[in-house]
Amino acid sequence: MELSYFQITFLAFLQGVTEYLPISSSAHILLPKELLGWPDQGLVFDVAVHIGSLLAVLTYFRADLLRLFQAWQVSLRGGAMSPDARLAWFVVVGTIPAGIAGLLLSDLIELYARNMLLIAFTSIFFGILLWWSDNRPLVRVGIEQLTLRTTLIVGFAQVLALIPGTSRSGVTMTAALACGLDRKAAARFSFLLAIPIIMASGLLKGGELLQDDAQAQWGVLAYAVLLSALVSFSCIHYFLKLIERMGFLPFVIYRVLMGIGLLFVHFSLQA
Image (cartoon, rainbow, N blue to C red; front, side, top):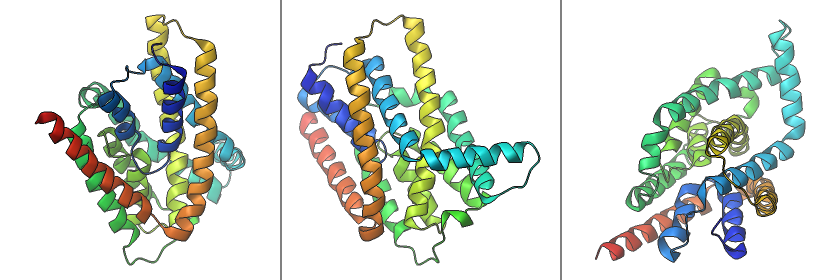
């Protein structure tokens, strides 16, 4: 691994911050390489920091996940379809569109993953869309009132997260808000949907690593996993508190300013 400890720390911290906030991790991971000339972090490092983010969300929602899993098992055995069982099934259904699209389009997405101009435009556009959905004059409902229709809309919206700069958490929260979920419910459903997607991505990339027989620096990777997990856990915790008080406007402003900044950098490099 060609990265220094400072670079490893910075990138693991960046992954932890951006994975669950609606600000696009792909836009941020692009910047050190493009602006500072850092070496590409590589597949091994990507897998490590995503494992950290996964551990964070599993730990934060551990009680919810255990309850949902138990209710889901009861429903599989023909038992009552409780609210927890319905939510568990909705997570499964909402994951299917992005899972299929990811398998079919992964090579195409990778081709455009470093396109700064595309990331700039998607950052601005989906940031404004997030603001619109958060400010729609709707009667807001909690996650207990989640419907199959809303689940499918959010699930298909998650497919758009394959476009670099969109933000998986951002687009799923946008769709959930547009369908009438309140802020906390939109964020919680987005985080629950992230779990199978990150798991599947980690398994897929992990399989590629085994095929490549990559030599990993396990101490460095363990550090990256731990840092990414701690930062991700903190972000989830404080994000849920922040949006209840302030809404999504700070993230909208940040996305628009970042997109404008990327446009400036792109055209400066072209000049």
